[in-house]
Length: 141
Image (cartoon, rainbow, N blue to C red; front, side):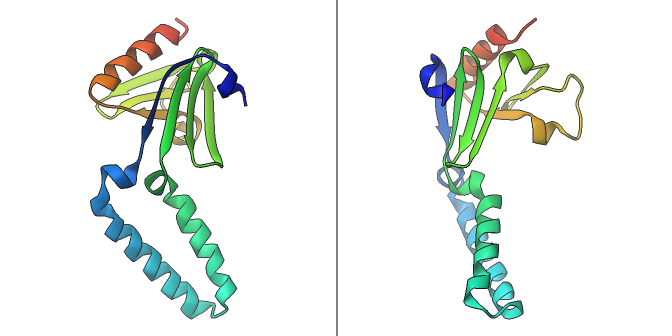
């Protein structure tokens, strides 16, 4: 894992469940409804594994903490043990700064592929200024 051997410039965590606990009722209702419908259509108990995995995967950014790390080599975003994204500073063609944080993209023009190819670094307050400074200093001109 290259991230462990690199010098970390800044690292932070975000957890949707902690930041927006009012949405847990909606997530629980979604799980309950999906599992009930799936159980009705496919009565075998092992068949419940598929919607459980699919819903947990879809809601992983809300249910599990996300870790964001900026290093000398690039930006990392991870959510749980299976979702790990990396974008090298040399590959960043566009950086968009907004009220919700920074979006790094390997595409020079906005595209429908942005959500699949880029990394969103959500940050606010004092952390946003620090992240912006690091991104501006690391991006190739």
